[in-house]
Amino acid sequence: MRRDVMNPEAVFNTLQYGFSQAVIVEGGRRMLLSGQVGVDADENTVSPRLGDQTRIAIDNIAAVLSEAGGDLSHVAFLRIYIVQSAKDEQDAISQALLERFPDQPPATSWVLVSGLSEPEWLIEIEAEAVLPPSADCA
Image 1 (cartoon, helix red, strand yellow):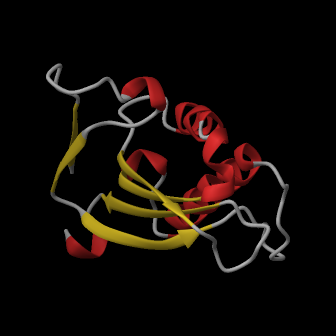
Image 2 (cartoon, helix red, strand yellow):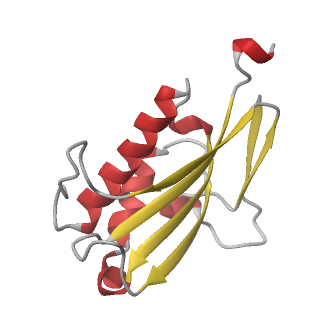
């Protein structure tokens, strides 16, 4: 599997925010992950803070990827839904992305929404990943 990020100088520098302009992936198995929020395995919201919820949502993505033999380096794209009331705290999302994706970060879209399924949730993150071919496919 080959994964190349693109960050042309003709567009703004997204690397400072923890994501790339584009990712090209060749080979591998495509994995689409359901949206993850800032809850633990017992469905408890981890914190009222956007940064904490973002980190747990990404950790949940990592846990799902791990079950399929992958990790965060296989993520090609994130779709991030941010509750309107947390709009002014978006730096916390960038910080979490920079921590969890220090090298060749995925492409992303950030979408403001009026709310999520539970009122205490501030963020939901969907992911698309491309995993290496499985041994069964070789």
